Image 1 (cartoon, one colour):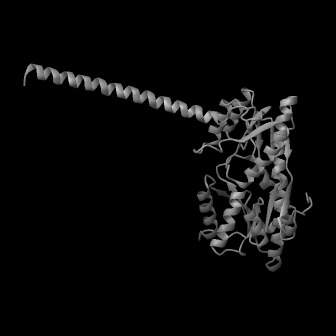
Image 2 (image 1 turned 135 degrees about the vertical axis):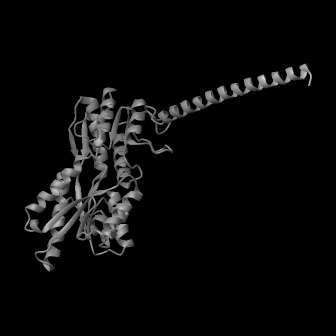
Image 3 (image 1 turned 45 degrees about the vertical axis):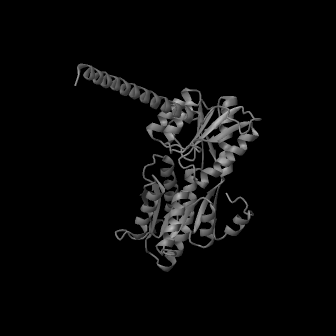
Length: 360
């Protein structure tokens, strides 16, 4: 091979190396640019004063951030908030609803803060992480209302939920009624009551609710015959909930409880499906939560003995009221408590027909 050919080959190699290096630099730049654009796009989902139509502008823009956006319960709360917001020239968004990726509550909070919303409605807990991010929002001039579950020592301006103690008393009253029927046939026996609790939640409302149940039962004539157990449920996803409930019903190491209290919609629906699937209908009394079509039908069929429902639209409206009051006056009520109703065989027909009067 001639010196000319060797020189030419070296030049080609050198040129190829330069081209490869250039492609790497360009590819890296494009990747960084695309990542940046995605971040901007996500944040743009919460653009301030986003109108429902091109002819509408809003005085304030609020973000509602909940743990399970697909829950019927939170959907109905959101409808109540949206209706109340429209009446006041405000837009409220179920934040993250249009995003393909599932972001955590903390991540959605960061996006809402970056979007400079005017207020945040948040399902919270007493964890340090939530406490810190609420503080971050308030320091940025964004007031936070906690919904259904509270962060008691945070800088939130108000809490909208149910009276956890009164909720416990409502459950406790029904437990006494069901226990009395069982003890009529077996006087002196023990009635075992399991209360399902979220294993990962730092919500103090669970503790207060259990106290309400215990106090109500303790002063009844059957107090010494009723044993209460708090049973942790892995609520990280629907499959883990189903697995936890299956273990309660069919685990050979556990004696089947006489009464099970399911204090949220997911637990109630899963328990209903499980007792049907594992042929446990009638062997255990179920006290549930919420008034979805599935749950109401289960009460009507006497598979669920009773369920407690909340005025979800009222709850949503209270959230808007709390944020508006703080915006206008610099203060608002620390607590807003929504109405609750116990639904059982005695009033299910009237409730489903919409004729049930306020029994609170």
